[in-house]
Image: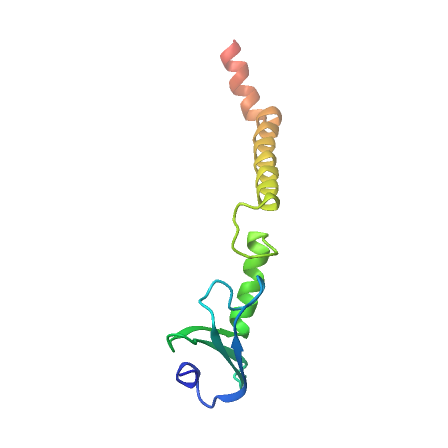
Length: 122
């Protein structure tokens, strides 16, 4: 089953039976127990459901890079799926304050705005 989901020539390096995984695991959020079939060429791991015998996920180097970048993007360094964490909210508020202060600074220092205000007052 695992070899059908990997490009040939697929060389099996190890097979592991998973009954539990951590929050940083490549296989987080999927049904357990599962079989993890690791291939050395290409460097990937295929996860097969132990109960149903169905393909669940494949994790390769490109996916691992994407997952790392996604973690940085969402600023969720624990579970990688929480968009409402305090760090992301703090940076969002800081960004909003920065944009608003830019508009205020433009309004205060712009010669064209001063001309419009001067013509309105006269």
